[in-house]
Length: 294
Image (cartoon, rainbow, N blue to C red; front, side, top):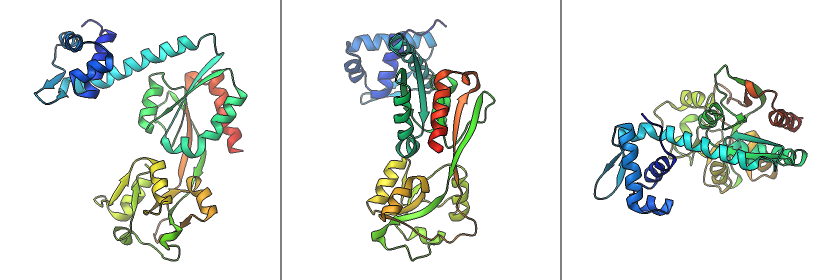
């Protein structure tokens, strides 16, 4: 099979995103016939139909769903290469840092500011995503260093524990739950908001409430979760590193939770490819993280 052309891959991604050939053409600023021709050419290259079409919408075919993540990664590598080339000569170095939403919002911003002041000649790119997404980008060479809750189990990576944060059940002070001891059985009757913090929290929580238990409200973004707690709409399990400011001000309060086993801690890890251990930018970021902890 011949290599895929960039324009064909761009058309494929546009149709996959919009689920519509006309909207994809508008996105790419080309004629719809051009998008159709590019998709047809790509389908001829791979020997499979990539979309299932009807009068109302367009969906990826099984072959299209299989191809999609590879095309996304290839295009991201191309764009990253273009970005690196454009930065050449303007900056002495370039560093791509990846992390999860909650750590950017509540831990890493101060580190970024210090790093920028101390290394103004390093072009910095910050990438946000779930841990597995960040790790995949690091394996593809798109991320130089990462700060994660869940480190990869791979011999190519150096994994350094940074710090651990305890966790407590918290609620807005207006809910008046500070004096109440809450049990796992009580969660069904309270305005409980669930955020799965990943291992070991998810195992601990499942052991408490049962694997089939379903919360009335679930979120997957730590900042949204915190904002809901601050608005007084519910209670939930929150890391002390995120709650500290609001506990000190009195807006949030710890709610006693009655359990036979204590709540687990979450450890934050610094991760980088071993092949980049001596890279100037990576070493500078490691130093900034260690200084922050001190």
